[in-house]
Amino acid sequence: MQTYQNRNEVPVKYKWNTELYFKNEEEYQAAYQKCQQQIALFKNYQNHIKNPQKLYEFLNLLVDVNKIEGCLEVYAMALDDQELGIPENAARLGALEDLICQFEVSTNFFRSELLKLSKEEYASLFSSEPKLEEYRAFLDDIYRTKEHVLSDQEEILLTEMLSAVNDYESTASNLLNQENNYGKIKVNGETILISSTNYRKLKRGKDATVRKKAYQSFEKVIMQYAGTVASLLNSYVKLDEKTAKIRHFSGSWEEYLFSSKLTDKIFRSLTDTVFRNLDSAQEFYRMKAKGLNQKYLNAFDTDVVLHSYKQEISIEEATTMIREAIKPLGEEYVKKFDEISKKRCIDYCQYKGKWSGGYCVSIPDYMPLILMSYHGDLNSVFTIAHECGHHVHHQFMMDVLPAEYQSNERIVTEIPSLSNELLLYFYLIKHAKTKEEKLSVIEKVMDTINNNFFDAVREGFMEEEMHQYVREGNTITKDYMRELTLKSYEQFMGDAVKLDKLSGNSWARRTHYYDSFYLYSYAVNISVACNIVPKILDGDTEMLQKYIKFLQTGTNVSPMEAAAILGIDLEDEKVYQTTVDFYNSLVQEYYKILEEGE
Image: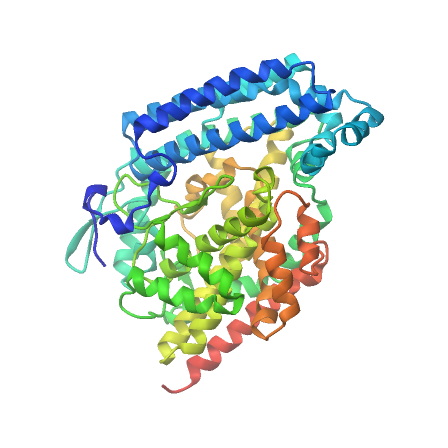
C-alpha cells in the first residue's frame, strides 16, 4: 500500500472534492458575507412569530440560512481536518464559530416566542396558514420543549456562554492528533512514525514486538498528558450537567432521553442483555489468545488480527467488493453508491497531520463528504462500506424530504452503515476462496459486533457513571478515569486479558465522550442491523421494502417510529438478544472452520 508523507503526495482521485461546496476561498467568503446579511434579516421577525404568514416567511429564511451555514461549516471543517495545525484553517473555523453564534443569538427569540403560545394559539397557526403543514413536525418538536426553554435574555446568555467554551472536543482532538510525538518504530525494516492514524494498524499486526513497542510508545505519551484530558473531560461533563439543570432536567441523561425522544427502558433492555451475556464478549478475547497460542492476551494483543484476507486490497478492489455486496438492496441503492466515487466524495489516504477518525458529514440538499484513513486491509474496506451507508441514506432523504428533515437522530442513523457492513460480511464469506479468507471475514465481523455492541455498551455505561459522579459533586481526574476504565475492562474481558499499568489510559483517546451518550447509539444500531439484514438476504421482499422506506425517513418521524417501520420495538430485549445470538453463531462457525482442512 502506497504511503504518503503529506497531502501533496496523494493523487487527486483519492482526495475528496471540496468544490462540491465552494470552488475556492473567494466563493467561500462571498457565501460567508451573504450568510451574515441574511442573519441580519431575522430581527424583522421578532415579536411576529404568532403571525402565521410571518412565521412561514421566517421558517423559509431559517432553512436557507441553515443550508448556507452548513456549507460553510462542512467546507471549513474539511480543510482543517485534512491538514490539522494550519493557521489559516484554524482562523477560518474560528471566524465561522463567531458566525454560528451570531446565527443562534439572532434566532433565539423564535423558540421562546413560539413556546409562549397557548395550545389553542399554536393549533390556529396551521388552520390560518396551510403552508405551515410542511413545518408541522419541525414545529411540534420545538413546542414539546415548552417546559425546558428559558426566557429570551437567559437563552441569549446561555447560547453565548456555550459558544465561548464549546471547544473541548477540538482541543482533545488536537492533543491526540497533532500536538504529540509518539515516536518511531521499525516495521519490516522500514522506520515508521507512530501516529494516531496508524496506531491501531500497528496493533493489529502479527509481529508481537511491533505491537508491544507501538503500544508502549503511544500509551506512555497518552499517560503524560492524561491529566490535561481529564481536566477537559471534567469541564465538559460539568457544563453538560449544569446546562441540563438550567433547562429543568434532573441531569444530562434525562435531557438526552427527552431531546432524542427515547425511553430509559430502551437502554436498560440493552444493558441488561449485554451484562447477562458477558461470557460472549469475553469469548472474543479467548479466541484471540488461542490463536496466538497463549493462555491470555497481553494488553498490547487485544487488537491483533489473527487472519489475513489477502496481502493488500486496492481502493478500486474495495469499491467493487462493496458494490457487489449491496446489490440485494436494489438498483436504486447501487446507483446512489456509484455517485459517491463519480463525485469524489471520499478522502481516503492517511498521513501525519490528518484527523485520525472517520466520518460522513452531510447537510441538506448537498452530497456528503467522507473522511477516512485507508490502509489497504479488510478493515479499511469495511470502513468504506460503513461510511457509504451514511452517504446513500442521505441521498435517499434528499430525494423525498424537505431540507429541514434531512437528518436523523443518532439512535437510528448508524443502522444503514452497520447494515452495509453486515451485507459485506455475508458477501465475502460466500465468495471466500480459502479457509484463511473465511476465518478473516468472520474475525472481522466479530470485531465489528464486539466494538459496536459489547464495547459501545461498556463505554456508554462508563459515561453514565462519570456523569453521575460529577452530578454528585465530584471531580473527574486521570486516576478516577483510569480506575473506571480498568474496572470496565475487567468486567468485559475477564481473565482473557492481562491488563497492565497502561491499560487504563484508553479513555484519554476517546473524543466520543465529548458528545454525551453517543456511543450507546452504535449498540442499538448494530442490533437493528442484525435483525433486518439476514431477512433481506433470505429474500424477504417485504423487509426490503420496509428498509427502503426507512431510508427515506429523517427527523420527520421519531427514532422509535423509524424503527417501527422496520417492525422493530427498541424497548424489546429480543432485539438485543438477537445480536448476541448472531455473535455466538459466528463464534461457532469460526471454530468449525478452524478445525476443517483447507
